[in-house]
Image (cartoon, rainbow, N blue to C red; front, side):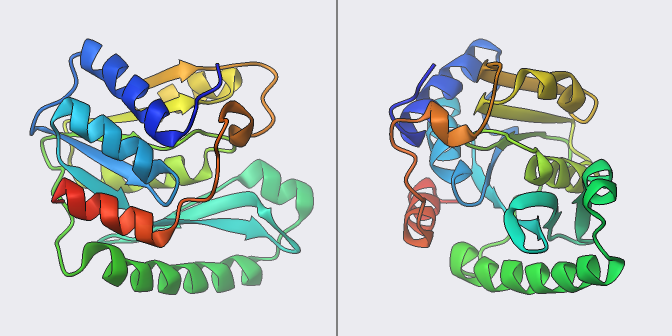
Length: 215
């Protein structure tokens, strides 16, 4: 399955989630920056649920920033997910991890000012926290967000994406109460191969979508 763009993928994902009886004000849609937000916007519109944004940043490997060795998400107590098996393979020093945690948290807090514009994070306590991204490759960001949200007392944590590797499904089910997806192909190389248009989502687009959704 190849999607035209993120908005189309979001509409299709939203329809599937509606069939699964998700939606309404007791479900909070949480889009991952930045590419997950256009998908999450469409999902929120179909489910008639509030939209929020997960302030998460990937931690890249030394000299290979595209290789995610983990991710950090801000909150009452910032949560970090590290891919321990990958870390042991490539031998990343602890000092590097600590340095990146500090840098990424600073980036997140600067972005929060831009995206939220003074608005508060939506409280997920007792609600269904539905995490949405444009796809999952390593899963570092999704794992960090799920780990963080679980500490906030939601009724359920659900991961919903248009596409992910087949071998990730069972692993993610250990982390979330439900995993919803449209396609889980093998082999899987990169999320972008399943989109005709996978151009970068801009900060302006994220801000506009959050404003339109009246987060």
